[in-house]
Image (tube, rainbow, N blue to C red; front, top):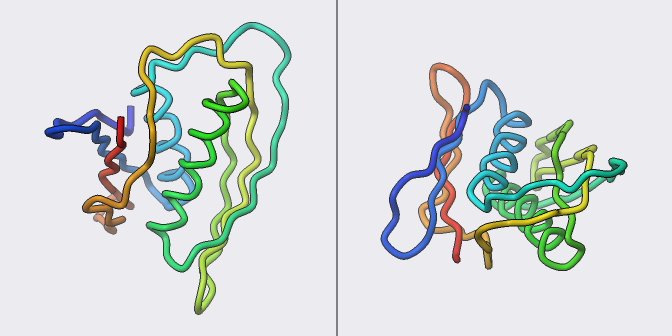
Length: 136
């Protein structure tokens, strides 16, 4: 798995790594699902497209994951497959994600918010990595 839970004093933290930025975002979403203990219900899958923009990659990641938290909490949906495209422009970053959703059968933990606490997407020799802290 290209993510792991890390210890954090009051909240949850997740370290994520991937070959490129789109996959980093997808793995962050999968890791967040794992942290929540999210389980999809049986039934037909639905497709959803999400378009977002933000001033930098970190803000874009927070916005993306926050949309998924909202869908889980308000719509009882979880997303299981992701095709993410990211475009860097001079003054903003754009994301387009094609996602497959399923009804959320259960989640053993609730995430209140995705935070900016020490959030930094770092290039590595293998691609990119980041640590995301979630308010619970």
